[in-house]
Length: 149
Ligand code: T46
Image (cartoon, rainbow, N blue to C red; front, side):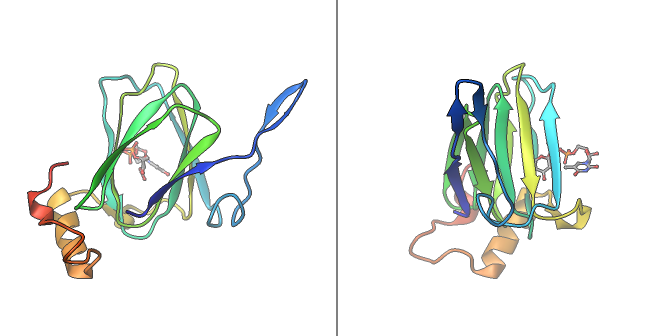
């Protein structure tokens, strides 16, 4: 799946800690947009879509949340409990964000400007696009229509 957890280098001294992130270095793309999510509760689910081209890094600056991802074949649940890690989510990954702690502040670094046309909001359409693109090799992927999400 087109995701990976990045461990950031923490510069610590007696004054506290600092993490520096630069586009195309620690962040594997040029950063065109940042946004942050806060005030979500453990009752809500956000996301529930995939992106055709957008790449993003999610960082829980405060608190925690969980990100469920699937490429239509395999599924993973990734807790984000630490501001020293970022979750890279590449193209064509369906994501759902949930289990936000009340104090969660989720920073998102994005590779492009906001573009509604880049969103795939129907899971059925997502599965059709995955199949059409041939993103999965026959032997490594079960029937995507049969997978849970
Ligand atoms: C994603 C997850 C992690 C804007 O006007 N500009 C923006 O850059 C964004 C991201 C959103 N919006 C507007 C669109 C909606 O009216 O803000 C409102 C809430 O956005 P949305 O429902 O898309 O929020 P989430 O949390 O479901 O999804 C967002 C991102 O859209 C998405 O790319 O991966 O966070």
